[in-house]
Every structure is written in structure tokens, then in C-alpha cells.
Length: 202
Image 1 (cartoon, rainbow, N blue to C red):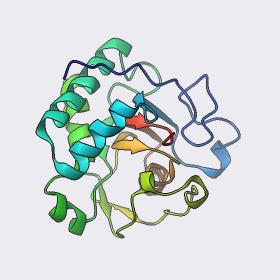
Image 2: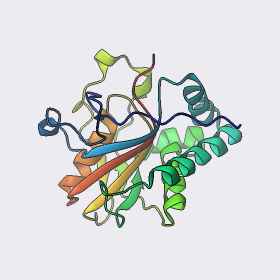
Image 3: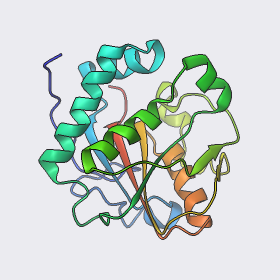
Image 4: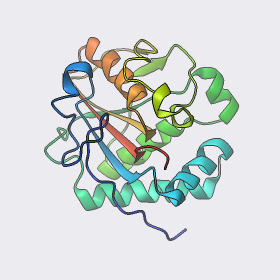
């Protein structure tokens, strides 16, 4: 697969106000995530199809393509730059144990693995999902609200001050913000998100 997605436009993870990947001033009082870096827009049909085939059908070729996109994106942008300290610990949003057994792998952990490899470091499991939830990407905008999923994660072991938390897709930001809440309550000072695709379905 030789397709390379165009970069996603930097925007707030929650209201999608463009111009910066940091959480905007309007959203900041109600959220925990400090900002989000994404590789591609979720509105791109090729990106969306690749993620679907990888996530739900364990297509190894799509997995290789997504790994390549992450490595190319990180190399091109010099991620994490000044927004996230270079010493930040990379982690991921874990699937509930029942869903991981069904799929056979955890796509968010694979994203973390790819990002860590691109940055020359390793990833660590800092979170546990205590509640199984429906896929946020499959829910309508009116059904997805930040704060609805707070409490679905618990931390596992000591939490460093700076964390990059990875997932495959960020739509409303509700899931990744729930993880940021758990991490900050456990002592993290700064939590940044990294996803393959950001935004809503067209």
C-alpha cells in the first residue's frame, strides 16, 4: 500500500477549533487532556477503511501501512517537539479484556508500539479499562459527550508526570479524556494524546 495520507489539521480534540493541537481555552475547564496529535483526518475514506480492516478484521497489511504512516508522520513533524517533553512516557488506551480476547490484539497498544519505535523508546501499560463500552466511532455526535466515560479507566502502578496516551481514532475525545482524567488523578501533570485519525465520519 503506497498511499500516504495528508496530515490532519491541528485542532482542539474536543470542539475541533483549528490552529493548534492544544486543548482550547473554552474546552480546557471541562477536560483533562492537554492536547492531541493525529496522523490523518478520520474523514479520509482510505484512512477510515484501513483502520476498520485492521481493527475489526486484523488485516496485517493494513497494520503495516498504519505503522508506516505513524513513522513517517513522526519523522516529518519532529514529534513531540516542544508541546510534549521528550522524556514523556508512552502508554495506550487498553481494550476491555473481553474485547481484546475477541479481537486477538489491542490496536491502541500497537499504535503505542509504533510511536515508541519511531521515537527510539518503549511504551508502558499505565491504564486498565474497568468497564466495556461501545465503540465511540460508531456513535452519533449527539450520543458522544465528553465526561460520559469518566471512571472507565484505572491506573496500574506509578504514573509519571508526563504521559503520551495512544489510540487509533479520536472522535469526540470522550474516551481519551477519560484516560487523561485517570492519569492526572494518579499524579500526571501533563497528558498528551496521539492517534492515527481524528475527527468525525463524513
